[in-house]
Image (cartoon, rainbow, N blue to C red):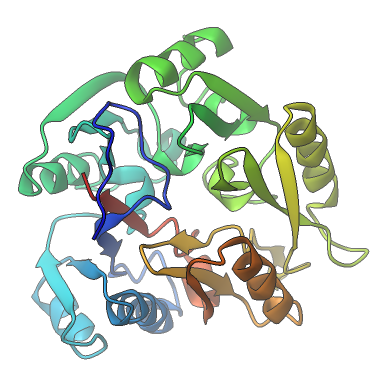
Length: 328
């Protein structure tokens, strides 16, 4: 495997070579009421696909019962590691690995105090320690899903999340930009507005807009007259283009509801691994078009779609549930 040449503290883009992928395995019935078993099956399918592509996968399991269930679903190529964690969203609670081989750990407050679970504030440091990464502690609240960088110093984020008073009420926009530069090497912040309707995270950007190459962004376009995020996509498109970035529009799944409530379903929550791009699908008639549009943006990797409707019932997707260890 070709490793990164540069060893600076910048955060490598997701398409940089990876040593392994951490994935969280669902274990809380109260987080997936009526959907726990299918959510476990969907996460297992995700882990198996990445392992089958030739990349190491480290699947976190909560306890003995959880481990037995995971082992019944995953292939021998998936390594199980028993850990203490609550939510499975390792994109937010896991370590943010920098190019110098250190792991940034910002403060974590349960997505603005909404979902505080034992272990979620410590799992990132634990994983970093086991990977022999020195830990750099920082003084502000930041979740990994709130930012998306292109490897050149540019980062996408949303005002809804990073400027939310439930995160860093004492920090100004300029002070947040300064911390992104100081801690992760981001010298240019492109501020989008709102995230998806009913996103539990207060509008994480990894459900809205994603870099697919330096200066190039994948953004959903509204599908159907009743798409609940049409205005959000339109606003983001203007901001992306005004920033001088190339905007590649991909289909949205359209209006996805569960028990009468709009779900924050998005093909933009794809996970990029060393050999594979995994796109969540939702049983929408637009699934095939969504996967094909993303595949066209990653010609050097295989792209597949996997069902993620049950995972979404817990508040996230494949990108949210995973965190990569770059090859340094």
